[in-house]
Length: 176
Image 1 (cartoon, rainbow, N blue to C red):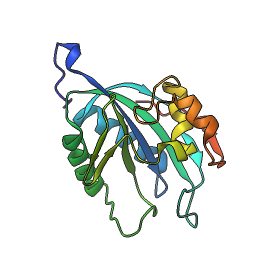
Image 2 (tube, rainbow, N blue to C red):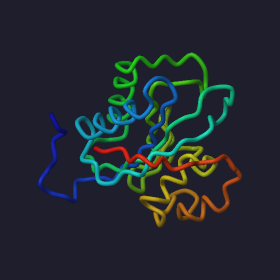
Image 3 (cartoon, rainbow, N blue to C red):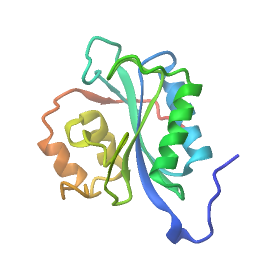
Image 4 (cartoon, one colour):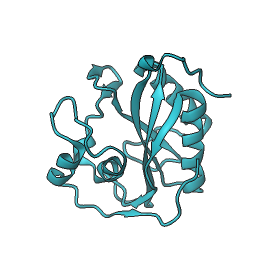
């Protein structure tokens, strides 16, 4: 069952998600996350390639597969966060440690041009400019997207990013 799509395209908001997985069948986990976004949040408009990356923040764990997805949605950010949290639980995620291993992780990176600083919800994601594993796939699908707080495009943020971690494109695309 797909999310409801209104006929008036002006109601759509472009929302960007960062997806990651470093436990189990990582590629299949990402595919399930993309399918979840498509069926429960909005129509997938763009997907980046899948990238293998070193863990960020807590480095003594397995490598991640990461990607970025843009969807067109009619849902508000808080509603999207609730849907993501429910999906996390269904996938068996338990939040035992910050930046710890995870079957799947979905973060809202941008929601249109909106800036939200609310309890448990910050958009744009507060660390986007510091994370190469988000910026590299974002450059692939939206290099000219303007960060609404920093006033810089994604490609500019990447050039200024101090995170020098390897972000290696996978040769096998994730098919949606």
